[in-house]
Length: 153
Length: 153
Image 1 (tube, rainbow over the protein chains, first blue to last red):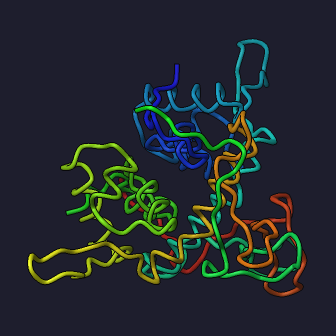
Image 2: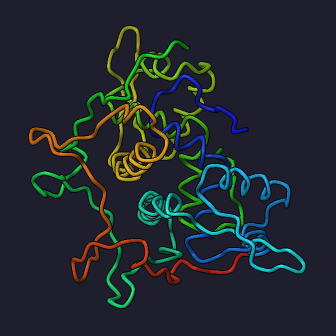
Image 3: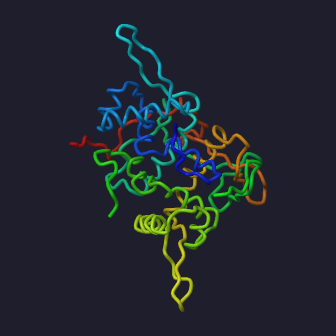
């Protein structure tokens, strides 16, 4: 069972962090975006205890972010692949990476996301669905949505 | 001193998570984006222990993400305001929120980000800096950048 780390917070960021905010989880997803699939590959990349990795992978599978797929029958071996729900995190993961590149990468970006084939840089932009304008944080207004309710703590 | 939670990981995502990945930190930033500034406001919104909140605010100030600003002289009172570095996290925060809206908001989005004035929805898009094409995760290729190096664990 997932720990409700942010109980009382009726917020899509809090719910997202319950699923991917555990230490190491976003780095497992980073590796999955980089093409890693097997337990041993994640373990080698992250250098963390096997039981911690196993726990994080199970949580990501339970959350529908990774699929555990049989890739060999004798002996049975499974690997971990991003689902569509998991791939839908790519913009968030790239936005965190690019913020780090801009503010805490003193030797320059360790990794560069480029447009496959074209070679241009991948950028995240905020765009208005109605007028198509490119937006800055100043242009964003947050209002209550249909899922808003006051929670009793 | 910040704990180097992801020592050995030469990655802008890992470095970003060292600064904002601590439990509650991203929710403090969410509240800051929503306009909250004062310790009591954050405390009321999050319902967490005052010492935990105080610790997280100090870390975010040390990281240059929040500014601690004197707003009253007698008695001295400070509030917390997003710096430009902090505001630069808005795309990552919105991307996490919108992923949650799509995948874990059973009653619909608790909060809606709209284009101030226009009322259109704010969307994050991946765009190529060269050809201007809108990209999907399939179009993204990750290569090593100038800050890449192999670390000894």
